[in-house]
Length: 505
Image (cartoon, rainbow, N blue to C red; front, side):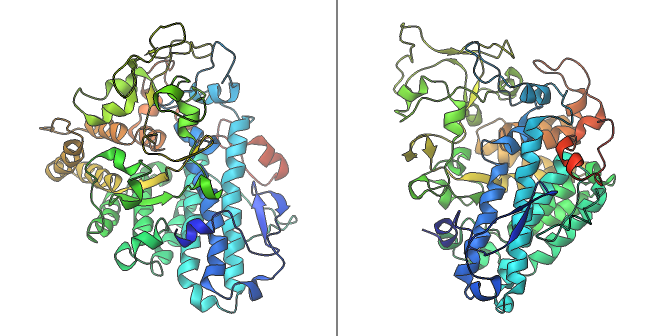
């Protein structure tokens, strides 16, 4: 068991103050020793850094942060059921691009994200105050990168957000809203400085170091930011995106797995050469649990996969997402649609003998049990269960994204040949037919096929413009571009009048 997983959830910094929701001051007491005396060894310090990882993992797990990254796209929907389950006006408003500043889901997501940032600030203050600070350079860099990831998601979702680097906010000096382009510059600087003290994947024993951040984790975040720089700052930075990708590629430490599902299989993913960053789950040790199967699958999947619980039949995808895959593309096998069977081919039937036939969502408010295609990315095959918690690790970033980021940046700079070669590497892995030519439409579609339900789609659709002009299922009209960022929750502005609401909200 690696050290980070062992200490997950064991936040052991004493009398540290964290910012919850950035403006709500809440004290969290984690022990009885001061940082100056507690952080005497790396193991002790890592026990606190592990808690920052746990909080950042919320961007990938099944909660509000993951949902606001996926709602409003053409690949993710949670319809209300005819039984009365799953109906939530807050999520429907996001799905339909009609949300406002009083949306409770956005408020919870903001609080979760700024709690991660505040916890990172607290841990950094503890590390900086320790007499052993000089021995903790790598841990300090690791925590700065964790905080940078938190601010990246805040910038991506809300655009203009307060930048706070202290563990406790002075009530007499509440933070101002920072313009998005300045948040971008802050994150970029933090990452660039952290890279110097982070180890490369080529320098560590992956079996013991996984899944902690490395130089390549930092370069991947830079590549993602540069890919979206025109959205965030008004100025494209395609060459910088290529350079960041090359920094990862040139290590030779990563390669594509033979099958994309290997990255999400509990029995295979920790040996994956494709994963760059992930979050471990070990529910048997009360150290996190993956609940995608619980939230996604139809109740009959309890029988199909011999699950110790009945799935809740929530998360679903649209016809438009299914239609992107050609027959023969192995990634299409991850979607469940049409008549369903057991793994041995027998019909999967309801108690009345009727076979489960999964169809597209027809009713966003009162869908029937069989409406809504499923995405079986975190496969239950080979998974170990503790109740409804699986031990599949959450995937944050993987090498396939590096290849597709570079491909898009090359194409936008006019190099179609090299871009096409990279796109076809991804397609070849899944037995999809090679493309003979390339367009931006092709690139967006390939990213959608490869990264379905990995939290990229909203960001990609905004960059390509389809978030605003596209049509799918229940989206029947254009979306104004100001909805490319979410409103700052009203409760935050009420708590801190120094914050400025985003335009039009």
